[in-house]
Amino acid sequence: MRVSRMFYLYRRLYVQQLKAILEYNKDFYILMCSAALTQVLGFVFLWVIYDRIPDINGWQFWEVTFMYAMIFVTEGVGSLFFEGTWRMSRLVNLGEMDRYLLRPVPVVLQVFCTGIGINGLGNMLIGGVIIWQSLIHGNVHFTPGKIFIILLLLITAVIIRVSINLAANSAAFWIKNAGNAFPLMVHNLADLAKYPLSLFPQAIRVFVSTVLPYAFISFYPATYVFGKSGWSGWWMLAPVAALGSMAAAYGIFRFGLSRYESTGN
Amino acid sequence: MSIIEARGLTKSFVQAVKEPGLKGALKHLIVPRNITKVAVHPLDLSIETGETVAYVGPNGAGKSTTIKMLSGILKPSGGSISVNGINPYKKRMENAAGIGAVFGQRTQLWWDIPIVESFSLLKDIYEIPDHVYRNNLEQFIELLGMNEFIHLSARKLSLGQRMRADLAAALLHNPPIVYLDEPTIGLDVSVKQKIREFIKKINQEQQTTVMLTTHDLGDIEDLCKRLIIIDHGMIIYDGSLSEVKSRFARSRVIFFQVGSPMPELFAELDQTPGIRLTLQNEQEFSVAFDRYEYTASDVVSRVMRHGEVIDFRMEDANIEQVIKAVYDGNLDLNLNQQAQ
Image (cartoon, rainbow over the protein chains, first blue to last red):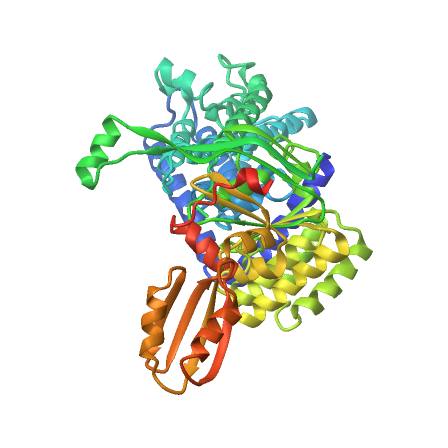
């Protein structure tokens, strides 16, 4: 199927979903505010720590907030546009995947459009502001090339985030109960990448750079943006990590789908 | 080649064996024990273009599993399928474009948006040309009486309305094949009638191949010329509906209302092999007999010899009784060779 057609169908399905949400979700603002509040609290927490200690392992306040906000922004994009991955256990366990399998549209595309997490908007907004402020306060020397690369890193970060969500939620094909425990655990491991990788032992560094490449969402981009010597060059692997996680996630999803058993009747 | 063809098609599921209670659950956690349950034994199936086939069997016989394999939802455990000339599981999207499906238990529509918008989404999904879409929509709205609810969202519809909308949704893109899995479940008589007429019309006008699973025997008698009965995952009958009726629906019942009690007749009939007497009261009774052994006039004249008959009516056995007998295990069809 042509890519342009996929985008078109995604947009069509997404807008319909959005209409439905705007009509029924009266807790729209509450959801958005609670997401924003969570982030602001985290930000305040960092601020309190840095108020006492000027730097952690050579990392300044605004450099850490950048990483912190990257995790949140990508989560926001994930919620807003790819929330459906979190509905997979429901789709699988109630046999609702049947409906998707009957339509001549890629299943993964339909999964993405199954839901919209409006709270993602709050995450993106506050996260965006923090990134903006980090860049301003972080003594970053901007050139057009640098801006381009930052945008590229943002895109790869989103791809990695969504791929990990998709892969983790594909566990629904194996774990046949309606809970989200496993993907939530995987999701929470992203917390590791909110702080400089150099704080952690080797094993964890390798883990969040390869198995769950969260470090390519926050840490490696930060080393590039703030010009951290000692890590120079590693950020260039971000596109590789993005393509790799995308391929792996899709493979896991397809393999899971072949195990799909529907439900009795 | 037939439009739907399956050879040695089989499906088995792995099921966890858990002993009851918390102890059993814990035990399963540590030492999982699984058994493989065969839902569909290797089966062969050929359906030609334009056929209307009833696919029936008791609950859990493997009907839905077969349909789900044919429609590309489930991956078969073995065997081969060809639908419209392609393998529905391997080429899922291509297959999906050429079929329509209604699963009565579950809607294909978007829950929160108006039916008419669901339809327009389907138009884009199936890339239905404008004129085809307009014609079909207009025709379907009229045939299925959808005007009153087309602007409501699926969640607000009654079951009967939803089912009509689902049927329309499944056929908007003029699929050459349509699978209907219990399309009339839980519906009232008038909606059932509408749906049956609609299916009949589509089948006649467009040569749409219809495969129908149902527990409603009215659906079968109304719509289908061919009957396939599946039980315990195996096809136990595949042949024409009229043949199974004439072969197995042998019993015929006559209900009598008579002027005075007839004790001698009752005694006599009770003695006669092949005749079963059921008394309602002294003056109303029914006589069931094998219509290949006795004729109706035999029975009626026997009764009339004993007194005045005020009224009588006759009922032929229907497919319902045949299938019920199969379900109950009382009738061994065992006639694959005979039927084919």
